[in-house]
Length: 177
Image (cartoon, rainbow, N blue to C red; front, side, top):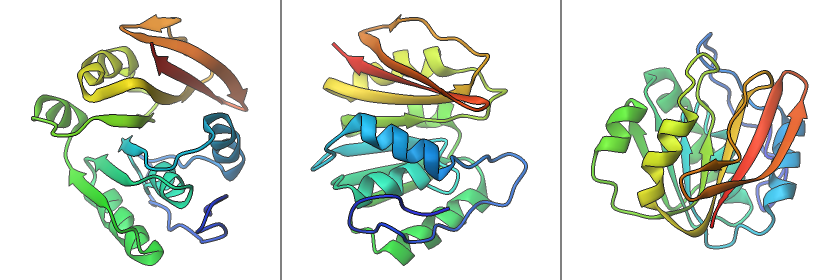
């Protein structure tokens, strides 16, 4: 797995070798980031980070600050190794369950959120509704889920903008209106 665009294009990202983590393919990342466009100065949350691939890709494409959250120690170690390897300057790495993260006082507002929980954890609507308070006007949420799962066109103040299938997975992009 590698960084597919931006200043760190071509860098190899270490993966989390765990049954609990599934990595996003380079093809899907390219498609997602092509849909997102310019990320200059964006504040990004990579929730359920795994290896941190989405957040690291956002950094390479101009994001200003990335918050990585994952509950697995193994994932946190891999994220830190990848951050060091890519020399990411502005980041926060938090080892905690998503519920704890959402209930703690979050002291920043996010422009872009990557939401890629384990497929058996269907928490998209709950998380999006909670994150609404921690987003800016016109913030974007990228959801990666199993293709057979469906999500509504609107969740709180977020509206579905795009939905694309890639093999067994689906990517849905929501925009705050």
